Amino acid sequence: MINIYDLKSKIDFDNLPKHIAIIMDGNGRWAEKRSLPRNFGHQEGMERVIEIVESASQIGIKYLTLYAFSTENWKRPITEIEGLMKILVLYIRRELDRLHKNNIKLNILGDINKLPEAPRKEVIRAIEKTEHNIKMVLNIALNYGGRDEIIYGIKKYLKDVEVGKITYDDLNADNFSNYLYTKGQPDPDLVIRPSGELRLSNFLLYQIAYSEFYFSNILWPDFKENYLYEAIIDYQNRNRRFGGI
Ligand code: FPP
Image (cartoon, rainbow, N blue to C red; front, side):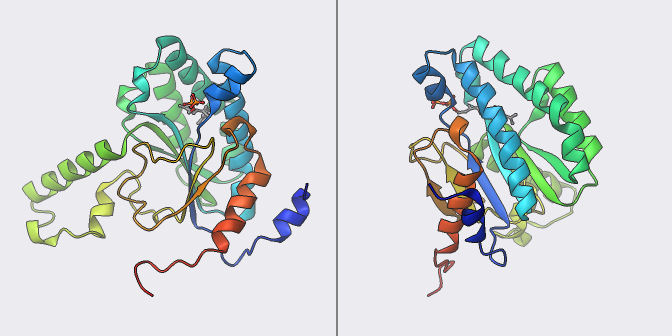
């Protein structure tokens, strides 16, 4: 196996994706393969979140988006939902000081008002503490759905029309981005989905128009930093044309 330093040396640091988005998938299967409850997979998934955030910011990625909980995930058994919420609280309690020290700004994509009180409070504390940080933006998609986000954006836009901030004719594909949770951020250059599934699962539907996709069979709890570097190297060998020639 190629060692991590050789792998890292293959990365072209002048051509890094500015924004990487990851659908963290396969936690349940990772646990089931070990005859463990599914929440053990989520817990191990949290360890990868910690590692990948650190690696991404250290190599110079400016925006990292992690899909942690979708609007559809509320359909899961209550024990799993509660487990995931506890892991989120644990993550913030364990990592907030380090995120702040590393100059990382935490941002949430999704409606956090619907979260239970404990995770909501932790999330707000983390957003407030890190709001002026500039090295990397860490977006955690929580209670997030791509279709919901577009509807949310349309409603915000209509309110702006109502109060005369923008006219009906002013709206275009670029400025509509400012009505989304990712306001002010570049679209993802690279979307990574581990675990072998080949679908988007309602993730960043508006923002991924020209993203490159990288699918891997590795389950998220096994997705160590080397797989992130492999995805980036693969991305750097693509020829992005954005509809041109
Ligand atoms: C999908 O795997 C994963 C999730 C629904 C949760 C992702 C959450 C974490 C990685 C926990 C830590 C997150 C943060 C931000 C601290 P799945 O359960 O659908 O896996 P399966 O397809 O194998 O069943």
